[in-house]
Structures are given as structure tokens and as C-alpha cells.
Image 1 (cartoon, rainbow, N blue to C red):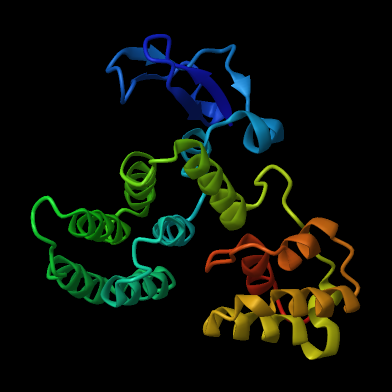
Image 2 (cartoon, helix red, strand yellow):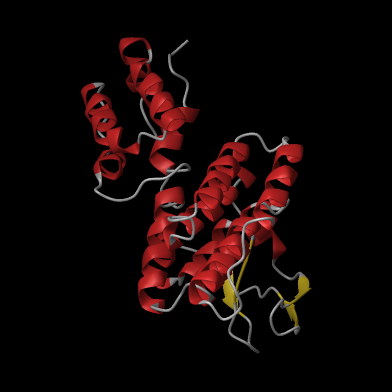
Length: 263
């Protein structure tokens, strides 16, 4: 992937290298641009240190699956605490997370959309009612049919509606992106023997944690993985990290997608 900034508005643009010389319109300034031949290649340091959370999102939407982007949108809502005291919104978030694994269930998604629209509104001018309305809008964004739009819309809400403490919000969003995607420039590979250990015990534990949302047990999973012979320090450290883990966690997803046993 390559990167450059729009000369009119400084918006970061990211394209595959095959798009060099291609013309397009900047979505922000409307200027007609051409992907320059001298555009800089994206590096790990950009993801870890240089890019803002929004620029990280621009990059990852070109690589991520719809499932990961929808789970990112749900994680963004949880990050902002929009459903902490609203059981209806919390239930809808959990449903959307479930549907992220079953993108074909459009009827359930539309039914959920109707339910969130019926959430009780607060009186005009009431601060609590306004936050409820903002939370409902964020949750509704997670249900957009296009997962890329869902992720972008919830990020926009987080930065502009719930971003009273902007610097703190940006750091939380950066942490959320690390939680869901890790470092896309340095993919982690596991030895097949680790997943075949004790008849696929690691994968079985990962499936149970994912299904029950028992993320507090991730350190136990890390211990089992290490006992199985895993030497990936970054993977083990993430599973043991004292942070909020969510559905879509890159380390857990890795263990869920690898085959349980060697053939």
C-alpha cells in the first residue's frame, strides 16, 4: 500500500501500489487528483506511531473483512459506553456482534434496526436524553449494510459526539484498533504443532471463550498456548494484557481460524 496527502486539504490517501497514475476525486476537498508515482510506501511505524486513529481506519478499511469492521464498530460503541446503562442498546450491540459472524442474516439486522428506533427518547434539552439519542445513533450505525460505512460512522460519532476529551478519546480508539487488528504489517504465524497439542485443546478453549465472551480467561489460554510450545511473545503478551478485550480480538481470532490439528 502507498500513501500521500491531498494538496488541498491534507487528507491522507491510501491506495494499492497498482493504482499509481490513477485519477480520482478527494472525498473531502473534491479536488481531482492523480495517485503520484512518488507516493510513500506504508510502513509499520506509520501504524504504530505516526497515523491518527482516523488515518489508521482509512488504511485498515482497505484490508479488513466486513466482519472485522462491523466488530470494530461495535467495539467503538462499547468504548464510548453508550449502552452501559441502557439494556436495550446493550442487547442490540450483542446481537450485531453475533450477526457479524453471520452477515447473511439481514432480516435479523433489519428487525434490530426497528427496535433501536423505538428506544425511548429523552425530553428536548435534557442532557441524559441527548446522550441516549447519541448512543442510539451510534448503535444504529453498526447496523449499516456496508461494514466499511458502519466503522467510519461510529468512529465519526466517537470523535465528534462523545469526544469531549479528544486526546483521551483518540488514545482509546487507537487502542481499539490495536485490539482488533494488532499490527497488520507484522502478521503472526504459529507452528502447527501448537494447535495440534492435546488434540486441539487450544482451539477448543478459544472457541469457548469466544462463544461465552469469557475474555477474562484469555491469560489462561495464553498459559495453555505457551505450554503447547508457542514462542510468539507478542501474541502471548496480548492475551495476558490487562485491558478490555472484545469480539474481534486479533489474537483470539488467529487461534480460531488456524486448523486445530495437523493432517
